[in-house]
Amino acid sequence: MVDADVIVVGAGPTGLMLASELRLAGVRPLVLERQPARRDTPKAGGLGGQILQLLDYRGLLERFEAACTDPVPAPRFPFGGVHLDLTRLTDPPMRALPLPQPMLERLLEERAGELGVDIDRGHEVAGVSQDDGAVIVDVRGPDGPYRVTSHYLVGCDGARSRVRDRAGIPFPGTTYPEVNRLAQITLPDTVAVLGNGDLDVPGFGVIPAGFTRTDRGLLGVGATPTSKVVSLYTIEDETTEYDDDTPMTVAELQGSVRRVLGADLPLGEPLRLSRFTFKARQAERYRDGRILLAGDAAHLFPATGVALNAGMLDAVNLAWKLAADVHGWAPAGLLDTYHDERQLAGARTMLHTQAQVALRRGHDPAAEALRQVLQELLVDEQPLRRMGALVAGSDTRYAMPGANPHALAGTFAADLTLHTDRGTTTVAELMHTARPLLLDLADRPELRERAQSWRQRVEVHTAQCDDRPADALLIRPDAHIAWAATIDEPADSAGPALREALSGWFGTP
Image 1 (cartoon, rainbow, N blue to C red):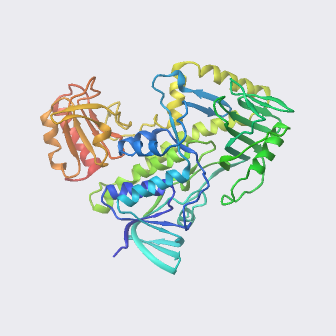
Image 2: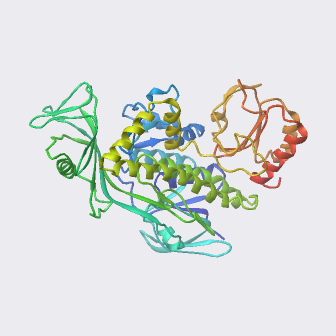
Image 3: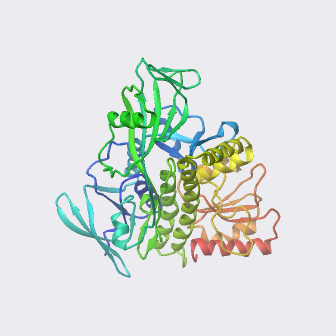
């Protein structure tokens, strides 16, 4: 007898997203969180990348956008000391939503509560063990120690994951000797914001917008003449070990600016203050038997703006596969594809974030020349679009089984506009329930007939769309395409391939 189908350790964005996805799939999760209440410290300032489209596919994006009080910034993103200016593109592959982490967690917790997720705060994992049938977790709660069991345990408990340590999963990588401080803060009237975003500081002169590099570190400035709120970012090489639970102060930020710039910058009231170090680490395996890892417990990236995207996408990939196993219909090896696919995605994210390390930490003329050359390349559409997709995490294509899979197989499904006999809808609207979809876009009854035996697990829809990408698409709950029929592909080829894909991903009917 288990107390929950899945125990999720950690009520950060990854854990809350996982719990909600599990409930959508009909699984009973229990979330254990060490902290007694949500922390007010905004470790992250917003969401960006592929997760925004996934939230739209769950019908949540409008709610998140409505909670955002700051204006949505133009799609310009720092990249290791240069900039990705995606405003040059009519359809930028990367965008961001400014939403401080405490607000994000509140929204995700509200969503989890609507779905009936149990979240126990102030409950700390003290021990973990597993056997062939269950995971046993020893917990220290407000009323004393107790024990719970579940089919699976997922560690979403951050960089210092106790779950990862208890499972004995190695976490190799590098810690860089630098401290990063990030702030959104008002400026006093004595500091003028010029028309180009430069700051005119009395007694010092002009601090240019963008990045200023000195032999003591890096200062980043982002400001607009119409607002007295400025974004500041400093990087210094330090070996100090900071406690994540100790918030940064304005005085600490001013000291960092003074050391990097060699001058004082008057500052006003903070809207956001955060401090972080950079690590490049990835778990050797995301699964050990009935114990799995997601989010920062599985990977740490040495750049800003990517961790939440990667962690929440981990959760969406994992949830339906865990649910299939709990419900008893998972085909052999399904749960192992979580490690295969999300470690691949993590490796792609690690690739571009470590490239950013090389760009930003170089101080000699050769490094400056490299940054200048890269910035010139990013003026052209093709490299700019490719880099934007890489940072967004939307360029990852999962490996799909079978000989010569369709070019769309393994990619994220586009939000097609679909015309059905019940009216017009979209892929996003059909995916609100997180169920697999078979979209027949060419009125091929033989394909619908092949899928008939899976109708309890897979929704089948017949629709038309402009410029259809394929005759049919089989879309997994995480919005990735599991199989596609080539336009005008013969029935004796498409039918057996569809049946193989349905069996391979959604089990024996």
